[in-house]
Length: 96
Image (cartoon, rainbow, N blue to C red; front, side, top):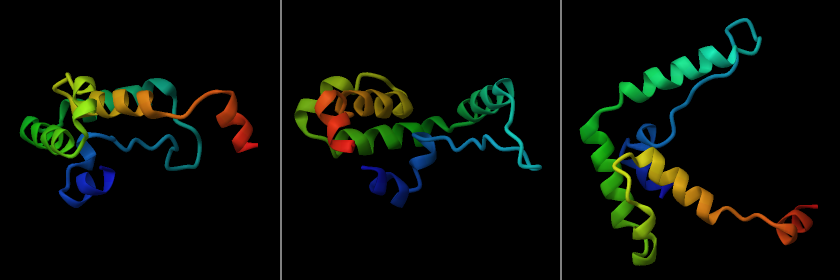
């Protein structure tokens, strides 16, 4: 799904790249990061957001559609990411 969104130029509607490092190499303050993220979210184009949502809906299995209620593709991505993230004892054991 990520590859399809990147190919169509829609990935920026789902993941907003915010640098956590200043130009001098130091770490930015949390308030600066939050302000930049909020600003970037407000600048997203509604038509592109709808197109990203459409691509996501068209490419998932029918059983996943119930998790895609939001109009915001970022929220849809985070919901699906949370649902399908492997967690638990077996996962942590396998990683070790």
